[in-house]
Amino acid sequence: MKKKQTKTSSKPGKRLWRAFFGATFLLLLAAAAALWALRTALVEPLAVDEDGLRFEVTSGSNLSRALRDLQKEGVVRWPRLVLAYAYWQGETGIHAGEYLLPRGTNAMDLVARLNRGDVTRYRLTLVEGWTFRQALDQVRSGRNIVQSEAGSTADAAARALGFDDANNESPEGWIFPDTYIYRSGTTDIDLLQQAYQRMQQVLKEEWQARGDNLPYSSPYDALIMASLIEKETGQPSERSEIAGVFVRRLNMGMRLQTDPTVIYGLGDDFDGNLTRAHLRQATPYNTYVINGLPPTPIALPGREAIRAALNPKAGDSLYFVGKGDGSHHFSATLAEHNRAVREFQLKRRADYRSSPAKEN
Image (cartoon, rainbow, N blue to C red):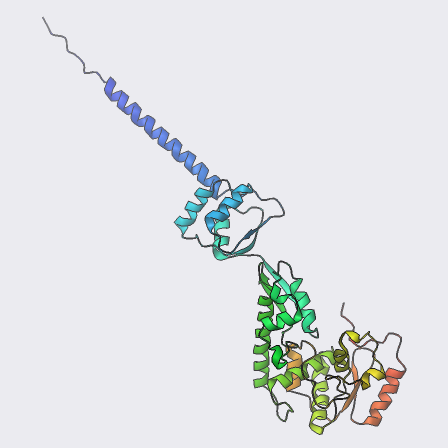
């Protein structure tokens, strides 16, 4: 009688394979979920509308705090994943300032922007011929400029810039007129300090390239002269010629007799109408009364006016008068000048103007 062969049961092996495949499936499912979360967290666009999103990163903040703040605003869904990505990329640094996130920005873009410090920057223009007070007002009105107590008045701002009241030091003329780029949180004094340093550099450069036989004892004298030139003409081609008139007058001991110095000396008392009585009124700035240059600049001169003051045009003219179209008539003699005054000033044209017409 034959013995029946018994088969080894395969059920335990099948159970192991099933458990293995089940665990593998769960791991794959978890990996897929993690990849989905990672894609959602990093690749998909953030919740930013068509106008973009502006947000501020304050000084002393860090990436973790910034991401939590954006989560509260509904912009970032997975701040911890984004933070982990930033650590993996070595981009955890962050810069203070205002940021603009355009529509379509994702978390990877966000991390890169914060790490690079791609903050929103603003433009502010200071115009040639303005006074220090006008420049200060313009700076303090700049978008997202921090208005400090040190910049609350012209006197306070002057002290903050290092000008000494006790020695009658004036900031007038020392702010370089230009367009400045700044970031949110910049203070009024910060920007003025930048413009002050810029003027110092420009004046130094132009002084080194000055001409000969100039009646200046220091670069500051040239700065004063440049401010007079800046106020006398808006015609670039006339700057060096007006400088020539003024320099020849100083070298000959003649008074400068320039109206803008009279107006500046009158200050708030000037009502827009310059009279003969004003020309005789004694002030430290009235160059119809005083000899030589006024004690300080009277406006912000640009580089071209400074260059003209230091490189005046040669010639023999000692007088000039406005022609009514923004340009001037130059004369070598008083008789010729008086004829020009009668022609251009006493019989003023209906469309008379002291500055050039603006180009369309």
